[in-house]
Image (tube, rainbow, N blue to C red):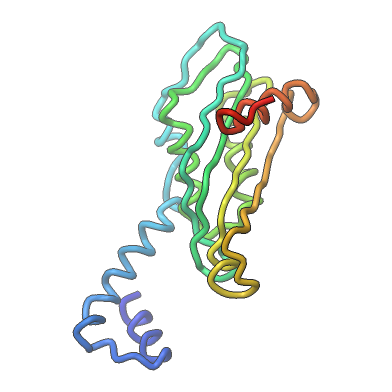
Length: 185
């Protein structure tokens, strides 16, 4: 990868041997490996048995999970917040596992729509709950720095499964509860 990055720097008109760029190929390689580490994350290992039998059937929400990913079209970052909810059916998951699942799928070349679906389906498969809801709001640097250059345009995506898709009251409760304090109806 180092050689490819050096060649890329030369193609951009840079000198990879100049002082400020001497270690850039190594840094970029390390950075890209971290930013795409989700390809090698095993979800079963990540969850590590943190599933618990629990007689709880009300909504569980983990909101404002920081998301950092890379657009697969331009390899530029997109980032924002992810809100995840599920309606347990006899089983709950360790709360820290939900943001870890978000990270595992975020650390791949992505489109926000797929990322949102992957998180929802992963939790559905692991927990077999009555439903899962995922809402993601993100700012895409491919829209801010280039192209249309709209610096304040956030993209919102959702994936609703089970009760969140079938029952408008469940979906409405989730969407209401993830609103910032002071704006809830």
